[in-house]
Image (tube, rainbow, N blue to C red):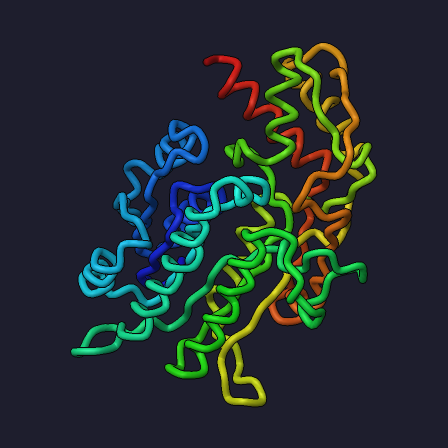
Amino acid sequence: METQLKVLITGAAGFIGSYLAQRLAKNGYQVIGIDNMNDYYDVSLKEERLKSLEGDENFRFEKTDIADADVMRDLFAEEQPELVVNLAAQAGVRYSITNPDSYIQSNIVGFYNILECCRHSGEDGRTKVKHLVYASSSSVYGANKKVPYSVEDPADHPVSLYAATKKSDELMAYAYSRLYGIPATGLRFFTVYGPKGRPDMAYFGFADKMARGQKIQIFNHGDMYRDFTYIDDVITGVESVMKKVPAEDENGVRHKVYNIGNHRPESLMHFVETLEQCLIKAGVISAPGEKEFLPMQPGDVYRTYADVTELERDFGFAPNTSLETGLQRFADWYAGYYLKK
C-alpha cells in the first residue's frame, strides 16, 4: 500500500483520468478529482466512469473548470495537493478546426492556471506541489516523416491547433520549471483505447456504426498506422512516472517529456478487421461491416509510432496488452453498456 499522498487529478471523469483515479485510490492515495463535465461527448459516459469510484473513501470529486482561475486558486489553497496530474484538456484533432476557442480556454488558459497554482502552492506555510505530471500528445510530432517518433525529434510543425496547444503546454511547463523550480513531467500519449473510452475516437465510432448497420468511413483508403496503447498499460506508465521527480538537466531544470505508447504501430485496416472480429465474438454484430474508403482528412497524420526507450530505461515501462486482447475487452464492455441501453 502506498503512503497517503494527496493527488489532484484534473479531467477525472475523462477516460485516462477516471482509470488513474481508480488505480491511485486503490493504492492508498488520497485523490481529489475535478472535471468540468462538458458535453463535447456524451456526459452520461463520464458519469458512468465516476460511478466506478462511488463509495471509495480515498476519492472525492468536484465539478470544477481549470479555466476558472479563482476557483483553482481556492481549490489548491484548501486541498494542498502534493502531486498534480493534469489530464483535463479539450481533445480531438478535427474538433479543433471548428471549435478553436475551447482549445485555447482549456489547453492554454486552463494549463496556465494549473502552473500558477503549482508556483504559489508552497506559500503561507502551505504544502508545496512536489511533482506536476501533465498530458501532452503524439500530435505534437505533426507531419514528421522520421519514425519511430523520439522526444528528441523536432516538434515545431503542428498540423492542428490541438497539437499546437499541447506543444505550448510543454513549453510553458519547462519555463515554469526553470523559473520557479516546479518539477514537471509531460507525457505524449499515443492513441489510448479500451473500455469506457472516448466516443470521438475512431475505434469507438467504428463500433457505433457497425452496431447500427451503418457504413464505416476509412480515411486515406486504410493506408494509415497508429501506435494503439491499451488503457491499463498507460495507467501503469503514468503511476510510475508520477512517483519519480525528473532529475535536473544540464541547466538545473527538473522537467522531462516522455512518449507513452505501445512501440508497435498497427495498420488501420488490421485494426478495423480485428475490431470486427471482437464485436462479432461479443455479439454486437453478426458479420463485418460495409466500408467507404476516403482520402486523408485535414489535421490527420499518416503514422504514429512511439520510441519509448527512455520510458523503458527510467521506469521499466513495457506495455504487454495485445491489440486482440485490448479490443476484445472493449467489445465486451461495449456489448454490456450500449446494447443494454
